[in-house]
Image (cartoon, rainbow, N blue to C red; front, side, top):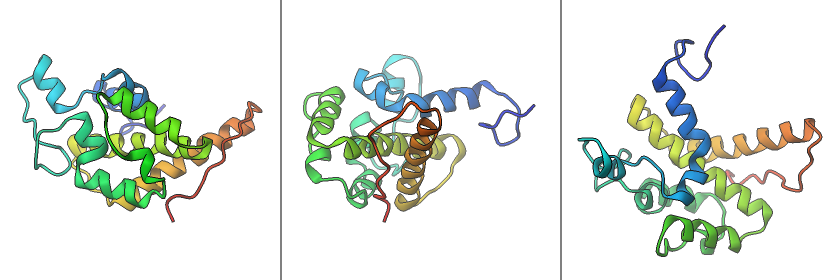
Length: 168
């Protein structure tokens, strides 16, 4: 039996934690419960708080999902309307609820998987040192959405959301 989330096929707490963080990203954003480096430094850890992606400023949820140059490029090439990603507001939950209220169902799905893709990229960069291009992150997010919708269709759950090729 192999544990697919790890490179060597063996279970580890680290690989399980990384998998859990990948899956829950959009919901954790709304709750402000994303373990960004600034949050970890505030609550319990002595960590370097510089952005794991650009190494320029302190990593925060706002930086990872919106302000880091990498995130801005991913959003720019996503094809999503600017109104969905502009402005953080007073909290992460405000940003996400405003963004989702601005889009149709396909745009909402794309928005959520782009958030997931940005968080996944951040984790891969921090944990594995992996480097991806913005286009790769977007393509991975769109592929994830497509596979998710296909699996739902096969289970006959049905959905009105269709994968939209925002990756070009």
